Length: 259
Image (cartoon, rainbow, N blue to C red; front, side, top):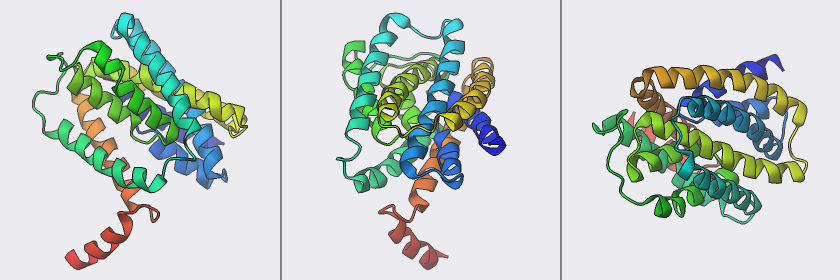
C-alpha cells in the first residue's frame, strides 16, 4: 500500500503537467495482484482526482475559459462513457498498433516545433468545430483505453485552438477529468473498481498534482514541453515493447539485425 501511494504521488505530479501517469500506476496495480480490468478501473479513481486537483489550481489562476470549456468538458464526459461501453467491441490490435505511432508524432511535434510556447497563437478552427471533434475522439479513446489521452488533448488545444502550453495544459486537465469521470462512472457500476486501493492512491495523487500544477504555472513551457516529449516517448516505448503489441515481433527481429 505504501508503494502504491508513492507511485501515485509521482504519477499525479507527471499527470498534472504532461499526462501519462497511468504509465506508472497501471503496471504497479498489476504487480500488486489486480487483474487488468480492475487495474484500469481502479486507476481511473486516482486519475480523476489528480486531474481534479490540477484543474482546481489552474482554474483559481484564471487559466480556464469556463464559458467554452464547460461544453468541451461535457462532451468529453459523455464520450468517456461511450468509450467504456464500447471497450469490448473495438479490435484491440488496432489501438495497440496506432497509439505508439501517434505518441511518437506528438513527441516530435513538441520537440521540434519552434512556435510552441506560452503565448497563444492563431486558432485553426472555431470552438464549436473543435468541441464536436477533439473532445469526442479523445474522450472516447480515454474511456476505451487511456494511455496518452492527456497528450492528445494537449496537441489538439495547441494545434487547433492555438493555445499556449500553459493554457492548453489547464484545459487538458479539465477534459481529462471529465472523460475519466465518465468512464469511472461506468466501471463503478460494473464493480470493477477496488475502492480502498483507489482512494488511497487518489489521496497521494492529489498531493502530486498540486505540486506539478504549481510548477507548471511557475515555469510554463520550460517544464511542460520537455516533460511532454519525455512522457510521450516513454509511453510509446512501453507500448511497443509489450509482447502483445503487433509491432513487437517486427522490432524483435529488426533490432538484433541492426546491432
